[in-house]
Length: 305
Image (cartoon, rainbow, N blue to C red):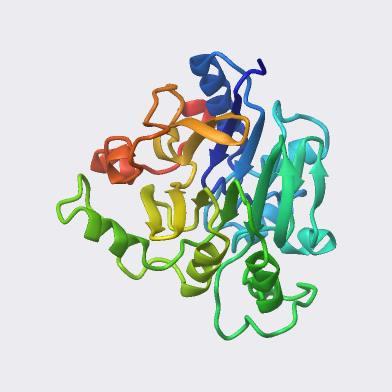
């Protein structure tokens, strides 16, 4: 019998490649098996040149760690596939609208579509919603304004994903609108404070309601979240929203598959199971909320963590 497939997902990496590699090492040790693939939900910031990273992502003051992977100085230990967020090296990604490998083992999936990865049907929609630009053509990002606009998905990309069915796992950057209200309806006294009702966008929600993937992974809002969308005649879509990669407890999410069926999932690197097949997926599956000092901690250099 084949060994279960361990899939790891990462929240917004924002250039922090070294630390997430360390976190994935710890996850493999705790689960006692190799991670078959890593999926990232956007805002990876895979800038090839260090000076590009500092110029375009200076607000985070993160080191340009991807340059080492692009130049062959370092290599990821597991295949990493990512979608685009709204903070990326869009100049480089424009040459890979349908995906491509940016460094050995590091692949951009593309702006919208579906891929078969490790036997799973994985759909994806890069970017966030900006109503003003959704019907405008995508142009090469040769200016700062066009760079920002490249982080918005377009109508044709949305339609491409809307036509998909039988999706095991979907990656989006921005949350679908209305999932916070859904969580409130299910539990008027949730185990932890809920995010703003207005997080997310209606276009992504329409995509999710149409495609009905079995699992949906989101980033962008830097908060962890768990909810299930289902109804009469509508199979369950279990949604996991991931925090940014400042601490692993809520920015690393893993799924163990038997064939195309998820048997168990968990958060962080301890290997502790948060959900098993047959259980309810909701806010109770989240790890304990961090204390305020941890939640708002400044980013320390990796070596100091």
